[in-house]
Length: 73
Image 1: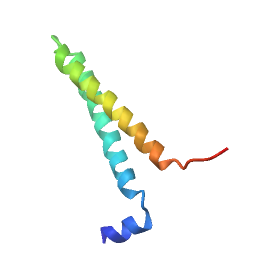
Image 2: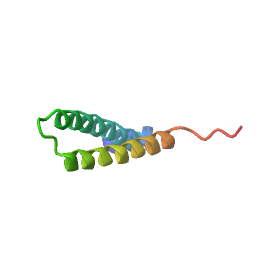
Image 3: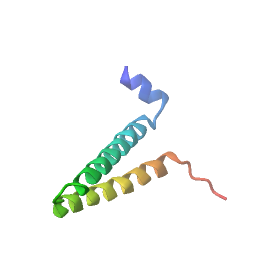
Image 4: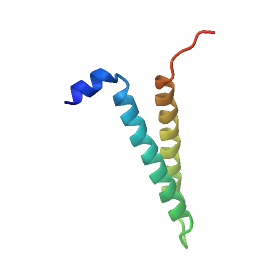
């Protein structure tokens, strides 16, 4: 059944990964904000989460670029 869906939309795996990456990015944003307001924020953890967020942001952009057709002007 999934093969049929993927045959209809070859970009389906990219769209699926994009949705997951966007959700992970949003979840990390919530986590960073929650840690930042703690009485004693753990800056090492916050720093790791922010780096992970930046990596996801880059991946999201790469995935979006893959979905955008190349237009030769």
